[in-house]
Length: 375
Image (cartoon, rainbow, N blue to C red; front, side, top):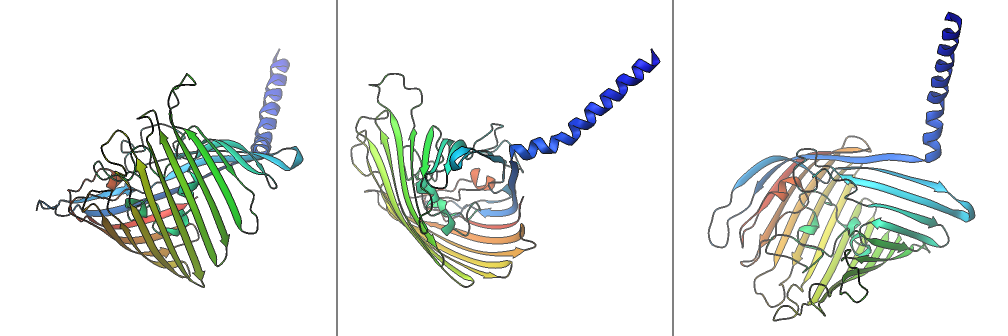
């Protein structure tokens, strides 16, 4: 009896040992990578004096600057084909109850698709539009309090908006995306998204998104052109909005210069005048690297919305990065938005900005001191 029990224990130990040694092999076969960014800053904000003369308020808090983590992987198939997948989630480390931290999963680029070096890549899921991706690398303040999307791209505040329905800088669900293989530095991409998922009848009106981009990237120059259209028939028959933009970048030794221009138009049949949100905007940036350190400067301007006077704004940003390693840096940022008397643009990409509302005609400003680590 005792000998049988001892033999059983030995078999259990052998089985557990085999499982332990096989686990890394299974993980490697699955080719799964874990990655992310932890980016926290201490922000000093002033929401500025409004056009009505109401003095602004000051606020300080720790902010999570689009911190995130994700899982991704690939598996080689026959004929030079690979299946690729990714699940990515934003995490607001300082406060999980603020925007983007509601406990849901896969709120960022999350998809499964097929990739071929000769035929290109097809993805299904949730993904940044080609329009959005076309010029993101031109913003040296991307995902910080000074992100250029305060004035460009999408919805900016409860009363000052760039779009009637979906931001022109979005990450829609129900998306199919195709990207061509790189051809002498050029890639093209097209995405379609059904914005009315609950439709059941073929004749039922729906909202949809079509986004296109062509990008040329061959050092020291990169350029892009993008177009996006939203058909809003489910909102009002015949309604639609569109936008196009041009991006240019040039790198000379340690200095990088970026420029982006966009123009939007709309035909919203539910309102009494066309081009209600249509406007133009531009953005100019410079980034000078000194080893692992960098000095950054940017200026952006948004023009008048349709026929509504005094609805423009400008943004000035200055920053300094101090690299501690290839994956870790300390940074300091100053940014100021100057609104005209009928607009209320505000900062857009941090958890501190998410709960900050400035008055009409105010000029909010921010100082951000932070640390960013990529893993």
